[in-house]
Image 1 (cartoon, rainbow, N blue to C red):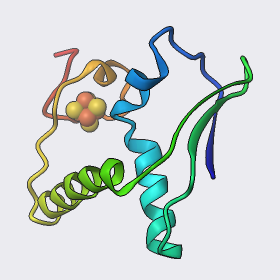
Image 2 (spheres, rainbow, N blue to C red):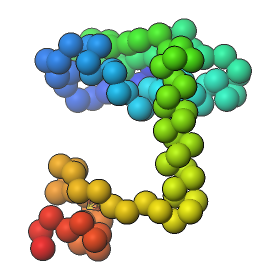
Image 3 (tube, rainbow, N blue to C red):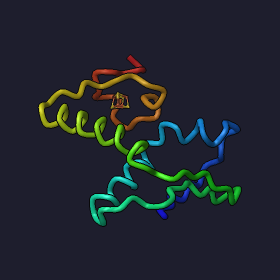
Amino acid sequence: MVVDHKTGKVSNAPAKIRLKDETQLDLYALAIYEEFEELPVEAAHLYLRETKTLSYAPTEATVGPFRERLSGVIGDVLAGEFPPLESRDCMYCDYHEICDVNPTS
Ligand code: SF4
């Protein structure tokens, strides 16, 4: 089992929806697979404030598409192709002053 401890709050969204695109846990599961040639039986976020756990059982079907996506991203980065994409996170980003996507300009 791989557990990521969270200090934030759990949103009210159903666990299945929240974990559907869970890249962080998929990355941890993939790292465990690469090291031990076995996926963890469970991957979970443990929310410390609410002592609530959201978890799923990683399988090749769940981790496989993430692996493909990650390979594509790594290929793009190695090729120098990673243009900045504006998102809500930009306003909190330490690099927004020097980034081509500058929400304050
Ligand atoms: S401002 Fe920050 S988060 Fe937004 S695109 Fe640029 S580097 Fe990424």
